[in-house]
Image (tube, rainbow, N blue to C red; front, side, top):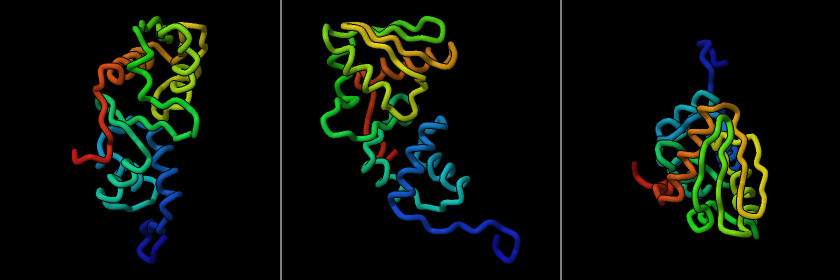
Length: 163
């Protein structure tokens, strides 16, 4: 606390800030750079919108519909860009989403969905050409289905662009 009783924000290094951004995207429905700036401020980190823009671009965060999603980069692993090629269709069913894929690609789709930050998926089960994604509730399943459908319709863009 400062002398006036107000909280002071300590500077954080870039890695710590970017890790915090990934955590916030996972925990909150964030879809604007200003929203990320506000969420960081809630955590005691004051940062300019231009810095957040650069961080989002460096982290490979995508804006899908009105939400940010982040897929941590893992060498040798498929990225979110494979979804349009591999996903043939999907159906929300209660708190689950059944995702139909090209033969032999369900494992890759499942792996991507398990790693996306900000996607309300508790876990997935993959067969040969079908993935079952489990969401915490029915509303989350509908949201997950919509976000996956948006990715497959290429309604995504890098989040570091001017909004």
